[in-house]
Length: 510
Ligand SMILES: [Zn+2]
Image (cartoon, rainbow, N blue to C red; front, side, top):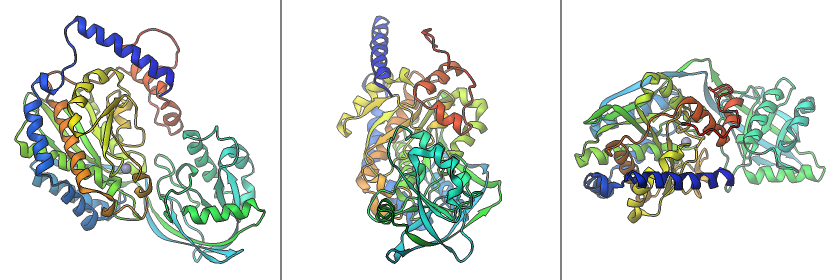
């Protein structure tokens, strides 16, 4: 959010507050709206009788890595169904959908041959291809992320080479445009005869000591050319050689397998039915699928265990919300939010009855706030609830959209895709890497995050007034543009609103 929008937001909130005061309808928190006794019971179950870490241990060690569309991921679906049934959720079932193509990781071997000889640590990016069987030798050349236009124009110079993505000079092109343009370069590289590309998601360098980070390179994007993430230590050395005018010579043997699509997968769904308005639904969840360099604990076993732990705490409390809480463990998140997009499509006819979704997908760190996914109108209503959590820590509330997880498809249809904002100081090393294992998750932090999710879910579903309904298309389109989502959605063919919201007028929108 820009400073301009932040200022407008404050003005809007002040105006809103005075109107509310005039009507004597200041937003009520749990101690005024009648939800507090139930929340106290749920907090007790969540903190004193939690099974969240048990769930995470099972998912990590007994199911393990679970790439969407693979047998391991189907095993995870069955595990999710069994857990939801054991917890006592109702209407537990799978909702099938397909992704465009399947992918299986094979080997990724790389060696620096000159000027010195040693093994290079690489892993394939998801849904990328292979070198000729047995591998090939090649020189390494640099391609500049900040000069992508010229690199695409001169892509023929990559023939027979391994391209190393570097970032030199003016950084104005970074961010989502870098990500998009990087995809264009990778797409052009194979027909031009490139052997392989070294570079992570968005062309970024791997974070952490001797870690690689796999991941997809676009929404539902696959590439015939092998693209690898290389450890920062090895990549840095290659780049230093190139800077000195020395051409490193390497041997690459990268083997992966594509499976022709469509490939079947499924979201896992279970409910706590509402007592007064069962047709009104809050979706609560995380994603069940993971990458495959480790056991997928923090991305997003933590979110899965948080959602199941939250469900467990609410069921054990014996408290029933007025509206339905629908727990959904999405698959296909890592390939481009495919599970949550499929959910929104499959439930199109009942989206008007949805209240939004509530997601945890930033790993193992403590929750420090709630991002209301574009809905600035809900900040004032949510704040008294956030303040009621003061004993569990300070909680920030804003209307930011988190576009990197299953909140985005809900924000696109004008509902609050609520992201539980977390400390990511350790997640930045574990996600998509070989360090994504149970050792990374502190049980007490997971327990507290699950309790916070249970409290937020129950409060939203049970408060006397309906928390949210979808915004109309025009207001949603304007909001998405203001939050700078348009460029990305347009580039990946996900923008559904045409020219809507583009006109710059001062008319207040409703
Ligand atoms: Zn994730």
